[in-house]
Each structure stands twice: as structure tokens, then as C-alpha cells.
Image (cartoon, rainbow, N blue to C red; front, side, top):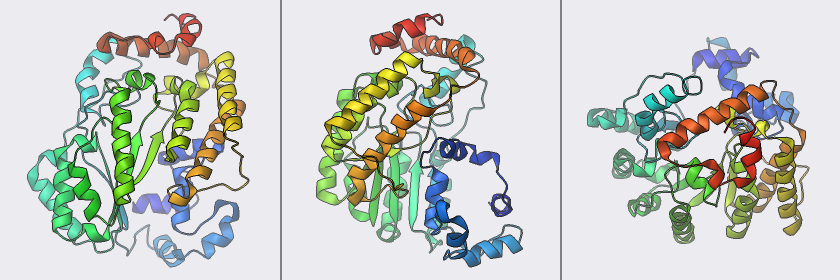
Length: 387
């Protein structure tokens, strides 16, 4: 981290920051902005809030000491491994063991769309490493927040083992824990975890409340996912669990964003827009033909009118506050509506659309499904590129 801190303090633009920069350019709230807020820094008044930041002395120390810091970590993101029960089409072997099993065949079917990649092992499969991790975590007295990622965390034995170890060690009671699930799993063990951590934030990744979600997040079943979401919402009432629906619309799921937003409004659940999908590049929203793009805009405008949503002049950076659920939902729908109206089509649009068809055919040969069964209104568009 020292090298990265040095680059940032010198005003450089590291390659790792490209995703946030892309979101910034398209007027979406990025992870970069959320991290700035943790230090009391507001982008629209950067110089003054940077100098007034409670972390100013820490920045100055790093600046004068080659990026080093005297501080222990305050929050951690822990990747538990790639064990997963799903093969989401926008995912990769790094995050899904199921895709890892399919990947050799995918590469054979569409080598340009599925480049060769190294297989990964899960460190959490080694009980000695898990012991070492929990012991080291117990020595970090500054930790306030831990976010666990997979794979599918609620499907992984290591997630429950580590959480229970943190509870037994007395660490959990002073720690906020977050994790992300694909909605296919509800395990009663999560209730014990929620009750023993200081607070738990659960992000549920979902792309649509229609059967299109089954295609994108194969082999999930939307009825099962919605049933589990209902269980989590009931658990929210009993325990104070914080829930967000994490969405990353792509060229297909954007069609049903209107019904997903409606679901959020009617169930009073926060909308957490993760990012603008840019990888795989063939799934970018920007590849939509103009006709479908306008139809999607019209559908979003209909939701805006039906619920009387109003675009705010104030940008909400901290989007996990329970008192801001409705304003955040409004902000998300307007962000995507405005993005659809204003984006400039990529220069590689034609090549990417042909690549999209090859990408789909490879997955569909393995999953034995067909996108047109879920989105028949895309037929003319996809046929024109060889589907």
C-alpha cells in the first residue's frame, strides 16, 4: 500500500483506479468518492476539506516517509476464495469455482472472449492458515469493519468458521461485518452471526427480479432468490440487519431495471449500485442499439412518474444509511437514466457486438439455454450480429 499511497499523494493516476475514474466521468458515485468521505474529504471542495481532514497528519507522515504509515488497518476486505455455486456470465474463475470448471471449454469455444487464466486455490481450505488469520486479527485492536467476499460466502464453510471464531474471541462484538451473497443461499447459522457482531451489512447481488436473473446468474432460480430475500427482510425486522440490493446492470439486465427499482421501492430496501460494468467489455450497457436504449429510458421514466421520484441537486455519497433508503433509490434510477441519455457509444462498438454473440454462444452451449427465451425483444439486434 505504501507505493500506492505515494502515487496518490503525488497526484498520479494509478491503473488500479481506472474503474472509479470511469464512473466519475459518467457522473456516478464511485468507490473513490466513498473512500474520500471516510477522511472527511469532499470532492467539490477538495483543497479545503483535504487540509481540514482529521487524517491530515497521517497523509503528511506518508508523504514524508515513502508512503509508510504508523497506523494499523481500520477496515479490511478479505477474499475467502472462489468457492461458488453459480456461474454468473459477468464473473471469472477468480471469483467462481463453477466458472473455473467451465473455463477450459469456454476458452476453446471463444478464445478471444475467454482468455487463458491461471487457476487459483482457496487459502481458507487450509485450517492452519485460518487459525493464523484469526490469531493475527485478534492482535489488530484498531479494526472496526471487516468485509468478506467469495465466491459465495454463505455457501462457504470457512465463512461460518471464521465468524464463529471471531465471536468466541470477543472480536465480533466491537466489529461491523459485511458480506455479499448471490441470494441463492439462506442458512440459519447467519442469525447467530448477526446477533453477535456489532452490526452486519448484507449485500444481495441480483440483476433482475424476473427470470432473466436465472440466465445471467446461472443456474439460480429467481423464485428461490426472492424467497430468500424475503427471509432476509424478515430477519432485518427482528435483528437490525442492514440489507442492500447490489446491482451492476449490463446490456441485458438494464432492460428490467425498472422492475428491480420498483421492487426496491415497494420493499423499502436500499439500492447499492456497485459500478458501471466494464468487464467483460462485451456486456457493457453502452453497446445497446439506440432503439432499445430509448425503450429502457421510457421504462425508467414511467417508474419515475409513477412514484413521483425527484432528482436531487445533492449527491449522496454515503449510501448505507437506513434513513436515506428512498433518496438513494431515486439517485440510482436517475444516475442510470441520465447515463443512458448521455453516454457516447464506444469506438469498438461493432466488434464488441460481434464478440457479444460469440460470448453468449459459448456460455449457452454449456448452460443449454438461450437469451431470446428471456429477452425476445433483443432478437432483431442479436440476429443482426450473427446470433
